[in-house]
Image 1 (tube, rainbow, N blue to C red):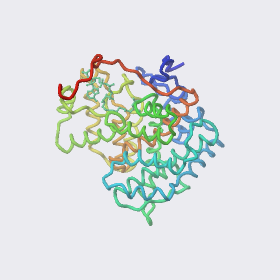
Image 2: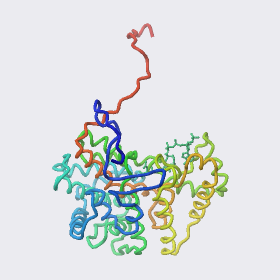
Image 3: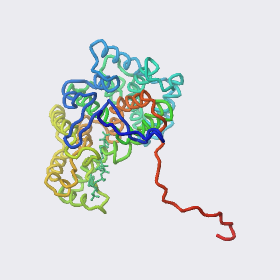
Image 4: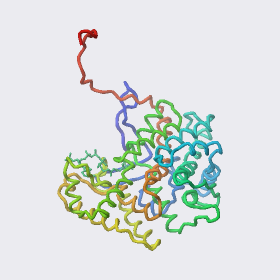
Length: 393
Ligand code: SDX
């Protein structure tokens, strides 16, 4: 079985696991969900199809897809009582903090669903609620930060179209995205749907292993994803490219600094714990960015800098010796910027895309009846010593 690693029976799940959801070959740059290549899913599926596949293990037939999209559509609204919670956040509240808090708050309005059920409506309903409502939570966090009233979801729109509507529509001026923009966002979500046992997914498993609810497990996943070394990298890439562009730094000079171990600068969006050849998602996104910019009839100087950095890193021994290639975050930020998503929302959108993967991993862990995660340590502290009375210290 792919990903087979022996579990330590003495201490339950120690962070390694077997899984049927996602397969990655880091040497060959292969990423598959339930056996389907990410390239095919990116080209031929929608995010709703891929979410169903990741959650339930097979591509949905027509009636399954209609039912799944109906479940998601029915859960688009947030309970009116949640509105006041948003008003309690300061305008400059980091959207990832709001997202994590409001996913846990969602549990307060669904106390009958705080179980570890993996079958039937006791699972499908919380799964649909989280995948659907995460859009309104994200969009309302953004609109709170800019002092705009909340929009109600439109059941006539696609998953991604509805999110753009929730984010950008005005009361008497509904946002109608270009088809290319809606498709690009849907592709972004597909490419983030799952990624094996990365930092945030392992966090979801860890929290879920105590039999905490799915709501608190994904809320914890958001916390892990927020870090700039993980999902937060998509914001850091744009900050890096903007810094190079606006401060007139030569890309060559920046790369030189990024190679210096003592320099705080890293080439954000480069490197990966698993991919040691290329991240297939980065390749797909790079191709898409051009399409969206052409459709929006805009150009982005940051894209030219990104191309230059990638070219340079490909020829630099420092990057070649360490197998540092662009990862999913290197081009995703430029795509989101082209769509008009504010930078501080980039990682929130990563979380929206990753929700099906987190939920599928939480479910799989409970299906395997894994014991509570309890990693051990090697103690390197003081040997036994006696208590020292205060007057002798
Ligand atoms: C994601 O795990 C997943 O699957 C994550 C993810 C997902 O879908 O869930 O794919 C999403 O998190 C992508 C990664 C986004 N993060 C970044 O782009 C941040 C920049 N990248 C680095 O911080 C780093 O590459 C990591 C965190 C991604 C990986 O870190 P590792 O595997 O611990 O690698 P490392 O830090 O041990 O680096 C090995 C060497 C070191 O040099 P030496 O000590 O050997 O001299 O490579 C160097 C590092 O200094 N290095 C970099 C670098 N990344 C690694 N040098 C400059 N710039 C970089 N970006």
